[in-house]
Length: 300
Image: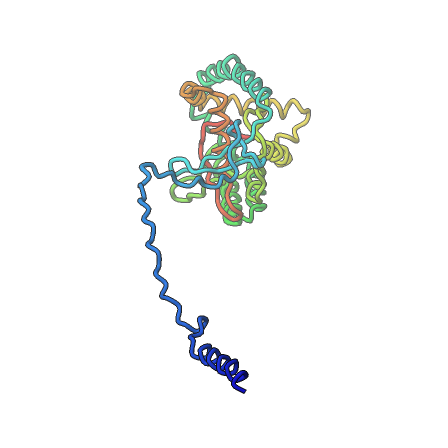
């Protein structure tokens, strides 16, 4: 019996010792001491480079059209809108510029100067008024096409007054201070522009001078509204238009010379001036376009 009591006591002793020993899992964890933050010395960058903006469509090397193929891109230059136009026919256009330039100095200008010596200025102004009054259908119809009813009414009133009291249009009583009916400088090219059609690319035609794809189509459309186009034989109409050109040139000698003399590249200067002039002439539908003398060749 004593032999078995010793192992039993030994078992009870060890059991009691294990029951009073602390559970290592239940003991509270030692507090976490955060490590010291690493101090990094920030050295200021002496040169601040701003992020590069996203480049949307950029200009090509030609300076005339962006790389998406869009044309007639306006941009602000000195508070004014500057227009650019594609010029894929530049070799042809430059050749036609030199042709027209020689034609002006060798033929048109000498004839106009001699004509101006013979015909008094007042008579030449009357001839210009007559041809302007004769072009009434172009302005009137294009005012209607642009929904410019006020301009169409003014044109109709001008035509009646100048034709009756202005001796067939030689005088302009409609432009007097008492009546004050302004001429609407509208054509089919402007009508196409008013409906959102761009100028397309630049074309310099022989005899007709600077133009664009849109204004060339407009020139054909205006020909159907020009009374001299219906003269028979054909050279009668051509002679009438030639006489009008000589008479008009005699009243503006020096304008072309001034523009050409002030330009580094006269071809580029005339092209840009023409495009800018036509851009300003295109209005939204229903708006007036008062006539003004730009000194540039017009599509008439």
